[in-house]
Length: 116
Length: 329
Image 1: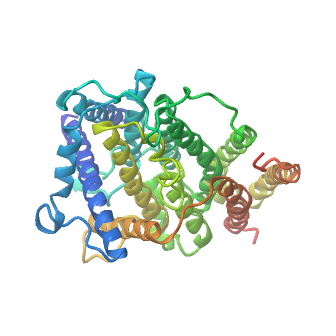
Image 2: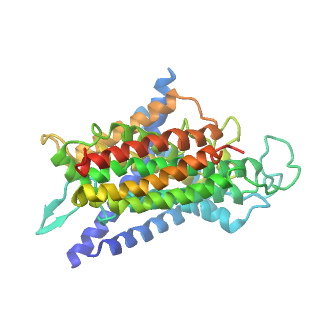
Image 3: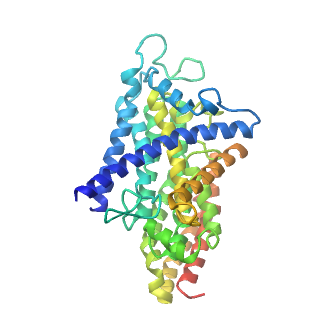
């Protein structure tokens, strides 16, 4: 049987298991509305203002993460076939690493990994 | 064909049962071990030695009232724990539990699927778990929860690169990303933890970060954020986040064992599947041990730790391994 069909069946089963679990206490538990139950918990004081949205400080790091992560994904096929590519494949890969390393050092020196 | 379908159904039911049972007793094991580490007994009242405690907990969780805050986004609020639980359960499908069994003329491999990109698939599925945390934190409309969700994002972009690079040495040495192939390569070359000792340590650190456990439990940091992303959850939805955390711990232990400690391999006086579970339990013990020992990281420090220390080290070791494998050195 195809591997991916088996995997798909398992994924569907696990979604069903988790979904049925998540509705269990909604079905079985008591439901007594009232009081201050619907307020969010803020260590005992009544919540002042709704949650605002604010700029997170690390959006630049998040973008760098995407770039480097894709570069690392590209290395997976290279790594699995390297033993048959021999030295020729290694030196070609080294050129790719050099470009990556230059980019990494540049971002570091420019303060791209700083918190602010 | 019918036989194959029967085998698949049995394997799926067994895996779900093992993971759910494993979750319950990993949780009990952790609570008892933490008790011993802190010179107290831990839960030992329900059943002999506390063995029925997980069942009591599950029943209690199920019979609790399920509450949703007034301002919450009801669809995303209900969806988030399902994503977290699903991501945790799904990864184990590609991890082999034992050597293939020959039965009734069929060769049955002890995993649900055994694709050639097994390791990549495992990473892809386990990375989905962070959506459960971020969306749960966002949908609750609680300030603490939102901060917990943001921290989860900050954490995943700090360590995932080092994690991806640290397994590359294993791929280089085994010439495959298929997890069964990686185990078989270790049968021929010896277990990979010794030649890959630095990547192994980096993978261990990032695996703890992936499971959001101390010292990287920033998203739920109970001394700062009440309970972080799951502050507003109750009943089974709250329990699902725990299911996700503990099954993730079992999964990451399974990955560590498969990648670096020879999976099911071991002396032949015990069957392979027993060896696999012994190694996984040892890895889980190390996880608990680390939790009992270390204090929590500050999350901006985690970011520079991941990018400026773990990533360069993993990268240099990877290039060195590549030079060795390709025969340049």
